[in-house]
Image (cartoon, helix red, strand yellow):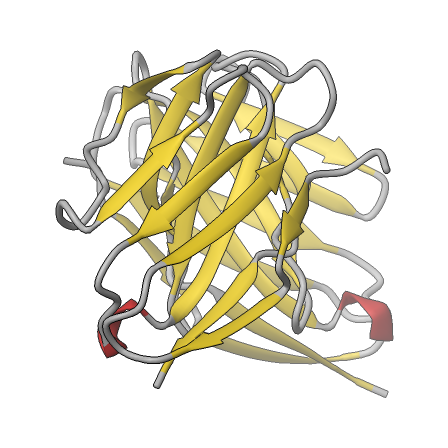
Length: 113
Length: 112
């Protein structure tokens, strides 16, 4: 596909469990971003990758959240010891380069019971 | 840090009329202002953007204006159609920074 792909589209899990969310950016895009969107609000920045490295992780709420992009393409957002407050839509975006427009996937809707 | 305020939160217009959504930002170093359209269950879709060296940009029925002095920018949609119904978000990005700071969104309702 031509767009940003996120899997799974929905994830329901119990409090305390570990989850991984995957993002497949547009081919050739060097920059990748993770955002979190709560109901009725705009997205909030979590982390930005340029290539394989996390250039800005200032938005990660705490050390339970971690993200990787080992080969500079696919990225995985990992959440340990999930809490009910982590429930949200996690959005991934990519751009050709860091100062170019960001294009979003449809997100993963995470529900923590 | 940057703060973006957006209003109105809900806008209802008659089909064929124009719609205007306004945003203000706080960081004078912001230099990039995109607008996104988000439909239910979908991710935000970029519809138009403007950089700080330009005062206005138009793409068919959609236009964006920027007033750097007042630190506000607006989205204008003319000849609205039912498929324009969605939530619209403005955002801002500061020079040297790569994260977008978002407004709270405007739910646009087009009445037939």
